[in-house]
Image (cartoon, rainbow, N blue to C red):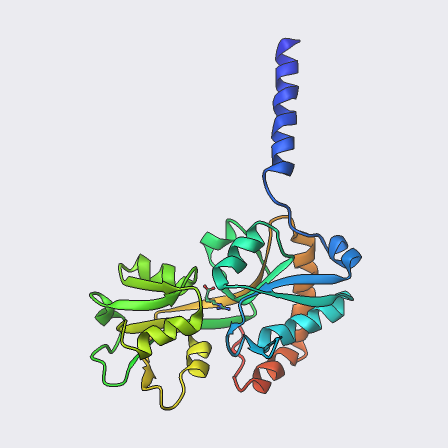
Length: 254
Ligand code: ARG
């Protein structure tokens, strides 16, 4: 009898911990009841998301608004630094995270992802005339990255010294002002942020290739499934491709 009581108690404790210890992501029902999808984003990442006045604009808000239309809810964007997007979604403070987020096995341990919708790459940006011509030349150099990104973890994994900045623009500025030797950032963002007159060049050799998806807290499985259906429709009927084109980029399906 004592053993049975102990077993029941243990099970109750495990169950209690499973509900209390892990923050739980919104379900499709929660979101539809609220009438809106609360989306965390770091709008310093053109062409995927940037600010126009107070409005979050770009490829991802365009896609997200159409997904929300299909779910019958409003898209509400909340702005913050990139690392806060990842921390916030894991804590289920928001329903969804939208920030050109790379899917990788490490992140998949702590959050859910939609199907990847785009194949991106990390590129190396250097000052014109720099002796750095590829990844191998970064070994004894200092590279600027945005905090919490795969650029940061990827460089660290390769033993490359990094200086991390909360804002993407500051990672670029570190290079233009000569404080670092190179800047590692996602390919389309590099193309859109490097302007004529900056004196910067994007190297041919890529650091990595990586897929983008939208992220959710654990527990949002049915919401992710619904969003995957909506996303698949938008890819299949050419909408996603035309959104990329409207932002001046070619669509690369993963
Ligand atoms: N793709 C990279 C990552 O997931 C960088 C994303 C940065 N996004 C942004 N909105 N600043 O780590």
